Length: 322
Ligand code: UDP
Ligand code: MG
Image 1 (cartoon, rainbow, N blue to C red):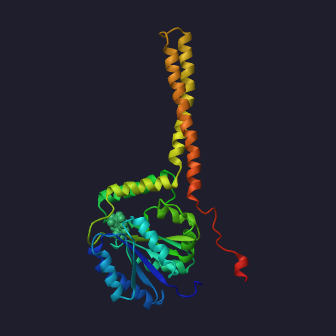
Image 2 (image 1 turned 120 degrees about the vertical axis):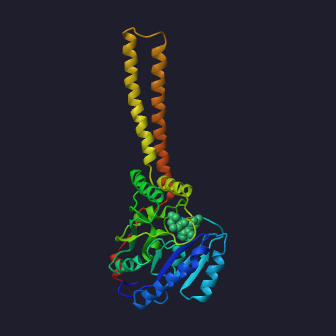
């Protein structure tokens, strides 16, 4: 669809045990969508798509009920709890069939829904991906803020290209989502994967609010798992680290070997010392180096098995001139 026409928006919202927030979320999103439709920014076919991630409470019943009453709301349900990232992916891949642009956000509306206007404007200005970025986290607890910000810093130290303070509140076009479906990896870290798709992108800043009801579904344990997943699915830097340590220890072992020989020649050792100390250094140096080299190959295998697309063609004049 050309960007001169107005487009259809789907808002994808993963929900896991969110019965406490759904009524309020629906009210607020309904108002938002109605305003956007009225101001002719999006078509009347636009919708909110709730993704029930195998909730154990009344979430799915509520979604079905909302769908009956409100034509702006629809939903899909996963057969069991698969986690936020999988639920989000399921929503995005389903919504792309109906929508020209999709915005993903959390059910608790911690991310300011008014930032959607600016996201859509940036899309009409030619951006294919618009990242929502938290300008401040004043309303998060100190603990959440500290852990979350350390998370982003550690990720970039570990060689993962992430947009600082961007969670999964983002606008993506149908084109991007179609390309994205070629990323077939199983360990998802969506916020790190979208930058790999490329295209013109931009950021929109907003203030993050408190959760207005219910509890966080991302306790520290899940967050650490998520960070670990992010690093290990994105970067071979930890493997490089092992190789580098291997090289350092190997060089050190050569120095120690020379030292041992010098001490022996000077006659300051007891019988057998040179042999024992020398072999400990040499053998551990060689071992560490070998592990690093094996790691390099494993790193290669790992990037091969992900089968990420090697390139994405963004424009083809041959198609355009048809
Ligand atoms: N969520 C999900 N599946 C899960 C855990 C969470 O779909 O297994 C959803 C949840 O319903 C919410 C979003 O992911 O819409 C973010 O969760 P939450 O707000 O609890 O995380 P926090 O904002 O505390 O990091
Ligand atoms: Mg939240």
